[in-house]
Image 1 (tube, helix red, strand yellow):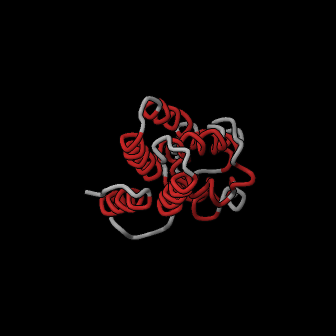
Image 2 (cartoon, rainbow, N blue to C red):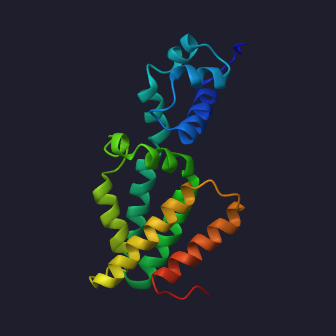
Image 3 (cartoon, rainbow, N blue to C red):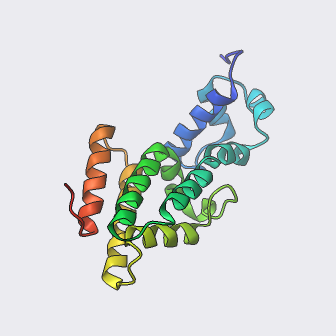
Length: 181
């Protein structure tokens, strides 16, 4: 039975969970409406289509990455690497369902306008994680740390978030060859 008071937030909550569980392509508008407790017509009153829902779910990610990039811009060496690790861990955990959605349907979703340019953000994070080093081995370590953070944050682990945050940070710093204490 449909709830009379289904809100945009209810629909978005249902959509993010379903997209993360079944993929963007594997989730229908009817699936979202049913989970949110409303009719498909009610859902379409709030959102014109499934893309509009995804756009709203992903919209905060771009500005958050831009803000992180701004914080990292003036930093170099170990200071840049540590700030990049902390910032990337924070964003990956805050947007872990969105990260999972992107990873599941990366080919269809990677160039969405509400997200930063993927090549640009990877390059900027690699620069910061490597402490702005041009040494090939340090750049490889930066890629490994970045992917480790992103893939782990999107996994369905049962590790408490505070433990996950601490270990992602410690593991990324180790990968980068930096002291963890």
